[in-house]
Image 1 (cartoon, rainbow, N blue to C red):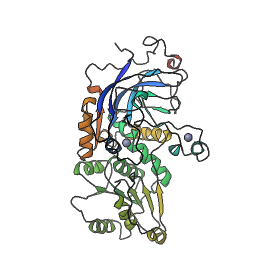
Image 2: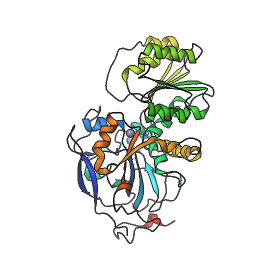
Image 3: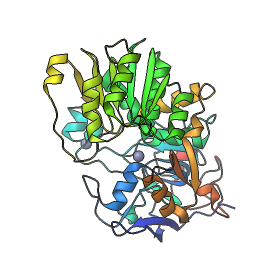
Image 4: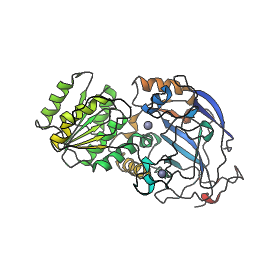
Length: 395
Ligand SMILES: [Zn+2]
Ligand SMILES: [Zn+2]
């Protein structure tokens, strides 16, 4: 029988460059508008590798609890928390995903209407462990400001987990780009999850050709299964001049109308500027490091390019990405993104495998935990904890 947890096992980053340590964290009380969820899958991201090494541009204070791409089941709903952003009723046992919580009050939230730039965003996967706001744990605690979306019942955890970071980032980026034109040629630089979803959306939108440049072979194979018409393996074609020649050959000598930078390798920005056709559009999603390099800005002027940056995403992008998964799950093998699962105790192996590029998307799978009991579906929380208001659980 499900027991309301008082502590949660969590893998905590206590020192940069050192293995995460397993700790038991007291589960915070669930007050009005808050939620407690049981983590099903927590994706491991390239960002997690940089975070654990201390090489992110903004270092979160230590200790912190990582894991920002989570799918989880509702354990308890605070008073007043009754619906997701799509207007669907939330019940104990439902699966949800959620965005970093923006404040809704600052200039970026209210005037610029760009919540991803919120000045006081409450991030998941970067906070002090006592707040239990990270996916490398058995449970997570969601703040009252956190917007959530219910995961449609039809889709599997594996099909959904990529929405938690890469896919919503791509949906948000394409929105800023203004979409991909029907019959455009699109080059995607990088074949990690962001590159794969970029190829998927471009292909599904009706691009004429989608050319993915990256490695290793397993990722490029998935790119093909997700609709890429051509892949260029950078380990087989290591010379950028040779890759440019191949792309020009495929695009009638003009280059692609759209380039999407997803590799995060700084010099890929220059490769993109060079290959893109006159009047083309360049979406830069992958550049998250503080690295600098010489650039020829005259290419932007001379070719009349539109260069667009985009970071992270807000709740509408989660919602749209999940709707895409729901309607396209029979067309593409979306669950194949998850290349390996690890128990929470193996999180350091998972991070090492991600760092070495051995995986597409490794996940912490709490369903591997012996004796894990799922929260009861639609049974309310009153029996488990009288201190938690149950108003939100009635249909
Ligand atoms: Zn991520
Ligand atoms: Zn704000």
